[in-house]
View 1 (spheres, rainbow, N blue to C red):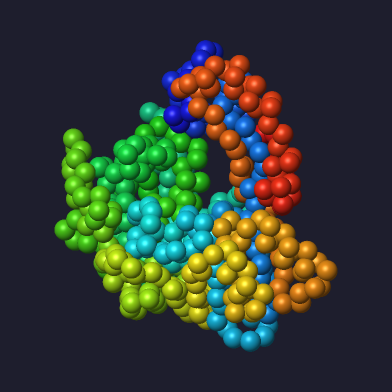
View 2: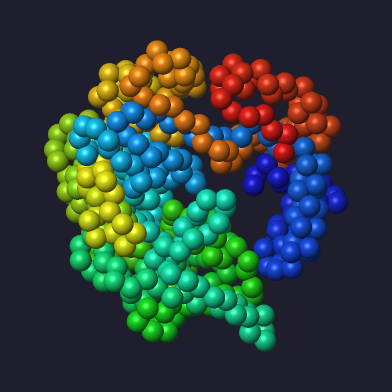
Length: 432
């Protein structure tokens, strides 16, 4: 956002913000295409973004595991479909993390941000909908939904919730549990830019209501086309057991303290444990000093000199969408990329997935070994593109405030050698 501050007519930063706000309420497909074309063309002409390549997740998977598929988001690691055709029903994983190499899952608060890790929260917690193949939204804890717009132009989205679902601690999933999560995660004090207002949906919501045991409705200011899509985000709106939500404070991380707001202040107290409805249940966080259960993980931080060795999850035998073949999932820390590679090549580690565990050079060499059958221990995979690697040029300061300078920089950069040398040719060049 700061890089856009130097945008000039005909599309200044304020006009861009207004245009995006307008297009997000547009429902006519033809007008939607026209408006987005105008916005993207204007941004292109400002020469702020230099796309380099299509970011793709990579994976190395032991051949004893069958039926691998890539996730639909960067930190979505789908493991429920995997089948162990030999050896143990337990799986060891080195995941791509926000820290690069995996370090810790944090408190696993579904209503917060770092140091919570996307992939771990995605194992345990589910939302009303989820992001499916071909960019389609598919049901999760909501079986279906419908939208109506009243005479004033305000939209109501009504969700029919899935029945016979329980949280990992035995609590029932229903509209009351859904409302409680919204009461905490989307408290008025948190629906501001400094907290959850970094995306649009929290800013558009007026209120929410329970309209039956398994019927829940969101009431919006105006109409907002991406509303349901934004409920697929891994954070900050995934469903936590009511038993883990505090009675005398909000579920937001305790370190946020008291958040002042003209309507009502929010007092953040964190959560008391880890229990969602997802296919994997938290079991243990093992450090070099102790074993931490879900309550200790949710409510305490690591001590000086304390490091995580692994985090253990167990399959949810009562999951509404079927039971995984894998019984236990062990997420392991490693000190270096070379240590991850060594563990994969020895068979100690079953899988490395995502951007972070392996360098591009290591993966390229392992991919070559797999193709040539030099190694018969593992398969390698490259996922479809998920997003774009780009250089962002600040238009609001220094010499790059001049659009001519920005254009000169963009035209001077040869992308393909960067992809070939730094990324070992693993990603596809892009110009948009």
